[in-house]
Image (tube, rainbow, N blue to C red):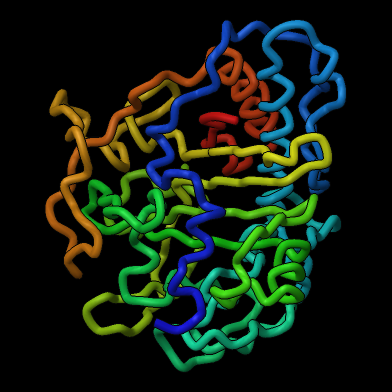
Length: 347
């Protein structure tokens, strides 16, 4: 094994279970407090409101408001040719434009199997794992270091079994890093295994992990953010362009007041039966068939997905978080924004 990405460095960062709808919401009584009004902006918040440290009670609403502002900044259209930067001249739902989080440097671009240095931040010439065609600014590649690398979910020290949607396709995962973190990885050669000792990543670092479903047979694609992506076929090892929809987005940021990072998970509301969702659901057949006690599919999985299984939410979203969701969703609805169909699961 080469001194490279085989250590799956991003597993250390990615902490977050990709089964985004199984997350447990922050405990507490859900008490509301005065928080800033809904903000629809391309500006990435640098931290949670400083009022959180003097508030007497459960501060969940401060963190949830931060998470929504961060989410909106991540899904803002990116500035043409500039990775990680929003285009403030465009509206939130500008069509046919990559979003800020989609332009972050992907794991497969940084952690190469031969241990070589990644290309510069704005470069797109990196060899795609599953094809020889060059990619451009508006291209997204759902591939990884191996033919199953973008199917496994983050576990403790290794990848675990994949997620199968009700249309019997695998969910694909993509990890990205902002420029602050990318620069540290490059400068300290953290893409080499031997350098991964006593690493402290810098304030302002952001990681994102997005989850995508192939849109074959989806009844209500108008409720999903969709785009074309190069998707790896595990059988052939080749990529083809496929329409995919965003079903989950995890964001983690290291802030000045929270060196342990702030962790955020969003999902599309039609993933499972819940308030605001409409059938058919992405990961549940709408029956009372219980969810299996553990993922029945091991890693690495078969190239062709086996039968799908039901997924349900094991813990309810905190009532305070539900209220924050409703406030932001209503503001997005007035804009006729696709993002009204997404919700914060937990901070």
